[in-house]
Image (spheres, rainbow, N blue to C red):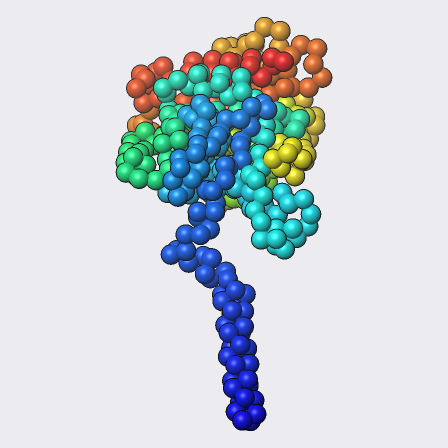
Length: 485
């Protein structure tokens, strides 16, 4: 009898061991795959069971959460959604997340381990912390000035604090309300289809994800390359440039919109925007010299994050001399995001030191404890300090006596550069209007803001689209808002 009891006990023990082994297999070795299984809704339900943390502008929340009493309980809401959409992105129960909502999802959703009161707390307790908050570097008045300045026109604005790299404004037009994508159901899918089908592409973040030919604003980069390389040693000296100028190894003549460009100095060429002088200087610097110079400003960098990824601004590394000449005036295959061109202006304003652009100031736990802080850091030295001083003077001359007079602000020193970039087959498309600039209040120790504006208004007459006419007034409004305390 005892023998049978022992056998039964041994059998039960084996069954218990098998049960424990299977539980370990499921809970330990297969946990990740089961969690990620599309049929498992537990994580999704848990994700939306608590309010999401908020994104802050100037200490005020521009996001919120709405209790829907549904299985996916809390739905994202947005205050002034179209105004801040290029900053926040969207957080959708149907389509996921973008921009800050994506880059800082761990903090906002409460899953970031740094939100826990102690190390490994979440792992040990299997708990999820309340969603934290993300404080941006955006200045509300500057953002509003950019948004209102663009109005209904297609385009973008990026504004940076040169000394820190803080992004003060990031606007894309036309925009959209990310709140229409927050939940689930037919209304959300209809809104998604409508936004994606729109010819105006309101969900395209033109400030950081769209590249344009920068046109004459790129001449600032070429001027920096010419001064740093020694191709120009005196900005007031003649450059030995003929007018008309024939592109190297071709019979193609490069025209000028301005007059007086024959043998013009670098200073005059920037002031009135001589194509011939700047194309000639680009060829003199050479392809390797130009490639090195543009890299210092951030061109050809596919890894720039603010923290969302920024589209790569392009300058070809393999070109013939005639192509190099055109690239040196912001044409051919040269392309840039508005943020990239704001970085160019910021480098000039900051004495040649380009700070890494960033959109997040700090992240905080719900109780206010700082989780991470973004301290200013250098991106690259874009040019020699002496070169920056000379370019500052040239950009000031553009505003005081050149093509950028519409950007002048009483009580401030303003430097700028206009640009009118051709596009389309055989340049038949309506040109883009560009303006890059920086501003320093009288008596201040350093410039407060650097701005890039691009306007792609297809409804305007071709002759009316110039950086000074369309984009400079927008830049002026943004700079004025940034100068206010």
